[in-house]
Image (cartoon, rainbow, N blue to C red; front, top):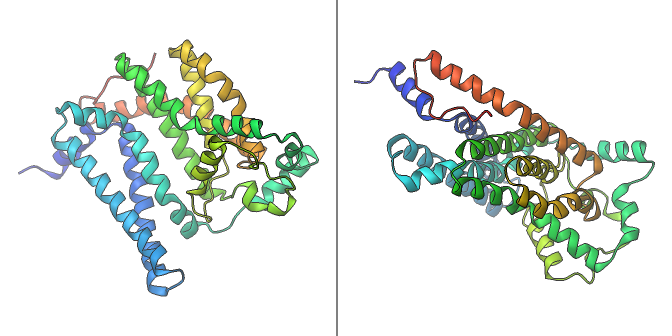
Length: 322
């Protein structure tokens, strides 16, 4: 019969630091999303379809999460499962993000985007997202849309390259720092809920930047359109923050990818303003979040290993510190 302490020690040994943090974020976001949507359904505050869809989404997220942690507890020697585990932080981020909007509505329904508008006016003497529309051109929209979409694969491309080359320490550096950036950003969304400029002040825009664009522009617009209107994920800009993190890691580990990514990475801050997805202050905050994550990641890993050592446990994986 396994004791409670032995069971705790077994689980502590089998989890990585990013998985432990994921449990906290996943548990909180799924629980709040379930309660929030059940309450809406009972009180008939919103359509029963939307509330039911939210319950199903949160329930599926819970099932996927439980399945993952069951697999790493009992089938860790299975190679396919090990690969899934190594890349799972990408899945964690998606699952948490999908349930995050309900969490924000439940815990902090007080938007701050009007404050961001005031801050932009005070800093720049104008609204940059409005000012930049004078440079509108369909091909410029296409390029910025292309740069915006590439955010979704740049980090994953670098991660896959490191993994295939068996640079596992460097791979985990990227994964942990990226995960921390996302989670710190999610906390920012919760504390400072804000919508994108195109949702906040549509009456100020006089140019249809999407007019004449190619399928690339339409694709970017469609991807963003998948998010519900209640989304509050502008501050900080994780698009810009994660891209900066990826560029720093690419410079360290693969200069070829760095130079390939560079034109899109340099274009992205301008793109997010031109496409009206972010205020400039969002971008600055996003950069700060990722720089903090890069600084924090190795310290967090060392602290986790020290905890495992104090519990007389063998760390699950050696330090990824250089």
